[in-house]
Image 1 (cartoon, helix red, strand yellow):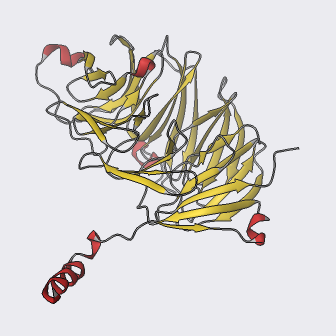
Image 2 (cartoon, helix red, strand yellow):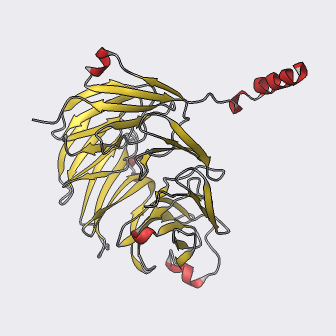
Image 3 (cartoon, helix red, strand yellow):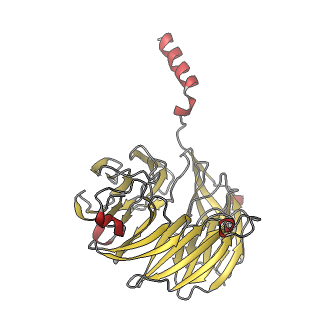
Length: 395
């Protein structure tokens, strides 16, 4: 028995990275805490570094993505289950009405049941070389899987409904799939599926394919570092794209600013944007969010608010080391975002800072606003916070 214990201890010493402490829940109940404008209700630590935004399942439980692992936590901070999906980093899952969770791997889609039990797999070979496979959910629970060879539209039972194989005009004249075709963003709505992709030695394009597998239009975006797609309803589609630095455009390298570009398209037309807004940014434009007739995104240390119909700038707020996409509470007229230094900000719709609260760990993922009014924030140190905004709305 003693020898077994010695072997176990030696194993832990040699492979310490394989040992992970169980998540720890800490409640904040002091009177001084309840008086904070940003009151921390509880903190669950030891979850691992989040790689995608927090999601809320149909039963109001929270889903946290850490690389290739999913963790399900209830609103009391209890870890209910963990599940792995594939061997690499996953993109944001697609959630079905029945609670099933669909995740993309390299050339595959995997179903995980609402209780964390593995369901079906759908696999296509070759599966592409994207470090972060893309996937989107559309009308009638259709799951879209974009791969270099084709776009696959699947139902929630794991069957292919249709495929689309002509990403580019050259695809019609060859049976060889471009080996280095990559996808950096995709999304879907009731009208269409949208993706931003590039072939080897070419720049990025935005493509729209309708819900029956028919090509609608393609728009050239250029030399893109990062991009996000947001279907806006009412025939509108929004895109944020970060182009490579102005140095490549023959301008001064001082400042090393990137060009941020925001587009609004009419899905039914798409040949050219309805409007376009350009900004110079220190980092990348984040995933955007719509709230009423306002469009929000952040870039570098600045939170931008634009008129969603015209693209005119409504407010521009500089927040130190801003790192996360925004989240908007229309009832309180409040915009929330986090910084790379672990500061959580609340800004009102006029662009004025209402409050800030220091948390432990950088905040790179968008805060999640719960229907019951609480805010959930996950930091890169693996801490999940439940926060109450006690400051009230704008007067």
